[in-house]
Image (cartoon, rainbow, N blue to C red):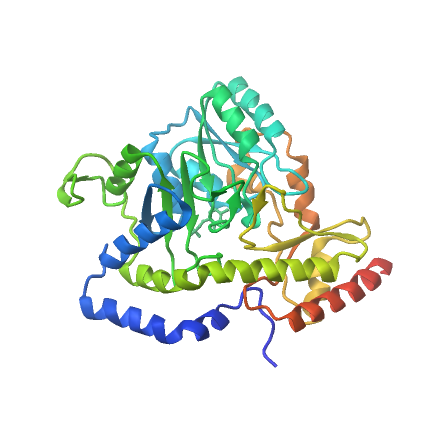
Length: 388
Ligand SMILES: *Cc1c(COP(=O)(O)O)cnc(C)c1O
């Protein structure tokens, strides 16, 4: 029997392999490797999918964040609020763009930015003589952040919102899809994300035409772009970057987009089955979904509700039983050495979570049998590990 995987990309590939082969062969035959017609078509379809006016693809999710921050012209006096419990790239992009990240605590039930902590962090920024400028809420594990509360604070303090939707493309919040919940939204097509390609890729969504034009220019070294979209390659009107989505990856994503809505349904089914199988187990707390939101289920993350052992102990025991699991995240980003000196609110929830969270295998093609097996092993371990 094949070993169980956290994310099984081969199941999806087997399903659409011939379409992928044809799409890739098309690009090889066309020779149009950079910003080819598939990139344009993908941007159009993704914008339609989420209801945004503009989609600007780029090289990866980190660049998607960085490009927007560059377009907003941030400087080191600008305080940008980021959750402490996230992947490095959220805070890294702020530093790369030359601004100052201020760390905000998260909510214990959704793992997303805590608006009360955000208010506290705004005061911290002011005390440090920084100008509160923008907020980067992260939709962790696929669940949209608490945008109503965050938008209120943004309005009161004149801040923009850049959504880090690297894990949540396909999710929704009230009647809106991820992609239209802030001034701009950044997502990632890293292979293991809910909507992934076969390499690196990313995209930015916005309704702001001026921002879209600046982003299109920055991703090609700051070139002047004519109103019909023609890039004046050797006329650079700003300092830019080289950050484009490869045509080959766009062609792959166009094929994957056809099955993406069904995959989102399957991810929800997998999450529901986990919920039914695990809901009566002692010592763990299952992920919550805000009633107003749907999740893209990038991860299914449980929390330990016991002082007798931590997530590392349980992860090791699961591994010995043949069940992969990952600790997202074993350390708050604010505790990593390069980020240790940036200002922060009280981060006790983020710090506590790093010892109790554990993400179980999650992908659209996880079988009920496999889930049953995971649940049985987990149940046994929770009983035995507890008495060690
Ligand atoms: C994956 C991820 C990113 C970065 O995306 P890349 O495409 O790997 O650069 C940013 N933020 C979060 C929350 C992520 O999970």
